[in-house]
Structures are given as C-alpha cells and as structure tokens.
Amino acid sequence: MKFQSTYLQSVYDGLEARNAEQKEFLQAVAEVLESLEPVVAANPEIEKWGIIERIVEPERIIQFRVSWVDDNGKVQVNRGYRVQFNSAIGPYKGGLRLHPSVNLSVIKFLGFEQIFKNSLTTLPIGGGKGGSDFDPKGKSDMEIMRFCQAFMTELAKHIGADTDVPAGDIGVGGREIGFLFGQYKRLRNEFTGVLTGKGLTYGGSLARTQATGYGVCYFTQEMLKSTKNDSFQGKTVAVSGAGNVAIYAIEKAYQLGAKPVTCSDSTGWIYDPEGIDVALLKEVKEVKRARLTEYAAARPSAEYHEKKNGEHGVWQYKVDIALPCATQNELNEEDAKMLIDNGVIAVAEGANMPSTPEAILAFQKAGVLFGPAKAANAGGVATSALEMSQNSERLHWTFEEVDSKLEGIMKGIFHACDDASKKYGLEGNYVAGANIAGFEKVADAMIAQGIAY
Image (cartoon, rainbow, N blue to C red; front, side, top):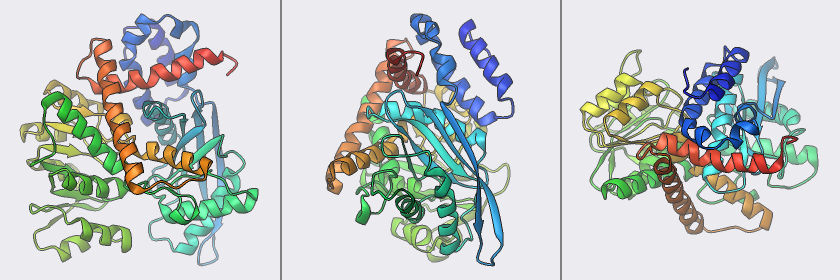
C-alpha cells in the first residue's frame, strides 16, 4: 500500500511487518488510512500525539482456550478471542462471532472497524470485537449451552457494563446471548447490562433484532433522498445473506415500497422474481434453522441455485439497489461491474466489509451511490447502545420509540459522512466521509486524554 504521507506510510509499513499474515486486518487499516490522508495533512497534532500509531494497535488482545464436552461425552477445544481496541469515547462495544473462519486477523479487522462505526452513532461507545472458531451449525442446544458457558467462564474476567459490553454477530443470536448472560450472572452474582441483544424478559430492547437490517435501509433511503431526491419506492433490490441483517433489510425494503428479489446462505441463493416471501424466509431461517432449499421447495416462483466458485450469485440480476448483508469480501470487482451494467444506482453494506476494494472503486468510478459498512450497518450497534441506556435507567422503551431513535441516528450518520466528505474536497465519497467523521471524534478524545491512555 502506498500513501502520499510519509507519516502514514511509516505507520502502515511497521504494522504490516508486525502483522504480515493478517490480511483482513491490514485491508481494513489500509482503507481507513487512505481516507485520512487529507485529515493528517491538515492537522499536525495527529502526528505529534502519535494518534495513528495508537489507533491501529489494540489496547488489549485476549486469547484463550475454550474446552467443552459434546453430546457424545468427548472433550472439544476451540480458541476464543476478545480484542478491546479503543475506549477513548466509551466502554468497548462490539459483537461476538462464532464461525469456523474466525481468527485473530478477522477479529482485529472487525474491532478496528467498530471504533469508527461506534463513533459515527454519536453514542458513547468504544470499539471491540470477539468470538471463536466454534461452529454452531449442526450442534444441539445443549452443546451450544456448554460451549457458551465455557467461553463466558474466561470472558467474564475481562468485561463489564462500564468496561466492555459484547453483543451478537454471526452465529450468536438470542439463544447464545441468553446462555452467555446466564453464565456471567452466575459467575459475577450481579444482574447488569453486560451483554446486548438480550431477551425481552431480562433486559433486552425491542427492535434490536431488526436494527441492522432496518438501519441499512434507513441509511440508503436518506442517501437516495439527499443526493437524487429519490427513494426505495418502486425499486428492485438484491440482498445477500439470510440471517438477521438480510431478513430485516428485506422486510424494511418492502415497507419502503421496494421489491427485494434475492437472498442467500452458505450453500446457495434464491432468486424470486415475485419478491422474497418474508414470512416464509423467517420460518425457514429463524424457526427451522434450515437451508434455503426449503424456501424454494415451498415457493413455486423461487429459483434455487447452488453456490459454485466464479458465479455472481445474487449480483447477476437487474436491480436498482444492492444490499450485501452476508460476510466480508463477498462482492468482488466482477460482481460490481455486472451490477453497474444492469443499472444499479445505490449499494449499501449491511455486512462488515462485504465489498472488495476493487469493487468499491468500480462503484465510485461509475457514479453509483455507495454506503460503506461502518456507516450503513451501524444500526445494530446503535440499538445495542440504546439497550445499554435502558438497562442503566431500568427502563423499557416501546418498539416505536427505539425504531424512531434508530431512524434518526442513521439519517445523522449519512449527513456526518456527507459533511466530512465535503469538508475535505471528497464530495460523494462516503467511504472517506465515514472514516473521517468517525476518526475525528476519536482522535480528539485521545488527544484530550493524553498519551498515558
């Protein structure tokens, strides 16, 4: 990676030398630092206080063994992580991911992104992330409970309502949060808002399940309105994924007047020209926890395609809006060019870093509106912070109250990105705008707190 700033270049080169094998983390850092070139040039205090060197190094990395017993009585061993990246503006906040692909590079990339995403929400939360290479697929409820209890036995030493508040992510939904919370309460003998995404009977927030999917649509709607005086109304939408983010992005897109026609999981994808049946999708994925083949079997208008290398999947269809909501680097340059050729006008990321750098550049060159993950998918963590507020005050807000606050936050995030891009002569570049707006708040807090922090 080449930077114009010798300061940024030297920081990145040192980071790359120390973390050469961590490609996901280095990709995330390179993208942010590239956006910060004009900010560093205009603000010598950043170099004076070593802000870049400090912000790319986690404050703390916790790695631990997780030993648990499966239903056959066999001992299994997984690796657990919690990266506490930056607490300049509040306690560490970020999800726990359970997936075989989890390693230190992935967790550091997610934690680094979380710093700026959390800053953009305007709420007082720092950046962190955690998880394990444990795969919940195919495991019984009892196996998942035993794993979660073993995982929390170690993690509980390092988290707390005013220190680090984990949430869910891939592989961690309401069931897992419940098991984790129960073990934390048992170990610490306290009932506190230490986890978000909790059940409604024990401190959870209404609208949390819907928040990331709804949020990406609110961001996209504001982006369309502010730049094109347009909206979701009458648009066709491609969505990837079939988890919480995808399901509720599809639901909100319908509510805003659009027709979502795709979704996907790890084995294949659905194209449904009549529009995705949300109720059926929820039944297949949330109730049965089954594959999309069951959706196709129950829906005559749906086409199921098994995933094969080199195929464009959900991105090959003629759509107006694309919402990648599955996983990192799922949308590449070829996919982007196909979407562009088919007339896409807006892309917003519901997953974390789902578009490759080459894909983002292709969208920007073609004049396609592009909402980056750290801005567009911040609805989940924003609503988690709202859950923290409710827990602290011992209050419970209505769905409408939370949803209204979420919509306001997502609109505010778009305008923060837009204003920052214009301030540094990068109008319309919301990747740079999101990075800059998120960074400036954290950098100011770090300078104010001194280098001892």
